[in-house]
Image (cartoon, rainbow, N blue to C red):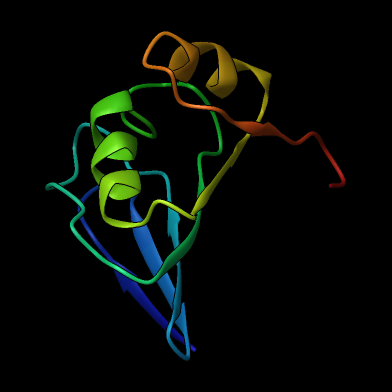
Length: 90
């Protein structure tokens, strides 16, 4: 497993060819990786998730899922991005 810290809160976790992107927010450079299985946003603050960042990731990884709490789903809904809502313990 390899963990790459980008700016601020964003991290990319790689295991084999699969990647997980955590908290792609506005204080991180554009995330332009492939092989992404999932995007996880821990909460809806813009330094942890923006529709622009998530849309960029999904454009390169159309099969990736987006996971986050209800607030993230609300923030991304206006951009037409579907979030699989998770809560404590999921």
